[in-house]
Length: 264
Image (cartoon, rainbow, N blue to C red; front, top):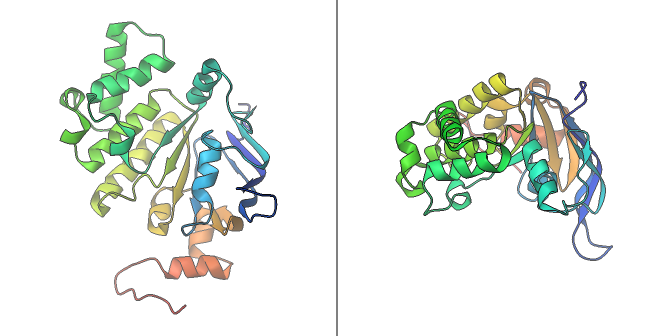
């Protein structure tokens, strides 16, 4: 990588329908460095999940460029080999872990499948790798023997994270990955992500509307509104001394003890 950003997004535009339709993402540029977490923040409709979908290859940009690990991602992969290569660089953890897991597949088999896809290992080495991944996310060998229905929401999200890490990616995109969890479970998963990042130097793109979550996990922040960047910079500066009225409003709208909604 030679010190280059693991993600470089330049003048990204996404528009649906005809040429006169409004841009869902409008001239967005940012970078993400190895071992750092960038939070994409904004209300519903801000364009943050669309950016995540473009990064992961689920959607194609109208214009602009996306580079992951120095390679162009502006167009979809055209072969199984290319898709597998891209998967070894970047993985997605979705909002709802239950829908992203096969309800009939045992947890160990789901993780083993991801390991087999990205690593050339013997069956015994694969089983050991599954145990390592379960242990890394705070789960036990017993959890490998059950289906997703037997797990709590937090445990399912840990499984989703383990499966993403099976590819040993440079980047993980987490799209509202803790929004469906109770606050105490959120904290556990965020602490887990921070610990894993310290060990692996994996970069995260963390998509969220929750600034309390941003405070716990992000190094850098991009604030979006109607598809455009309102403010961006280091998390401490954005969260403690926001310069733009919209960012100030978002922060004022974050629930806290004694909080009342700000006037609109």
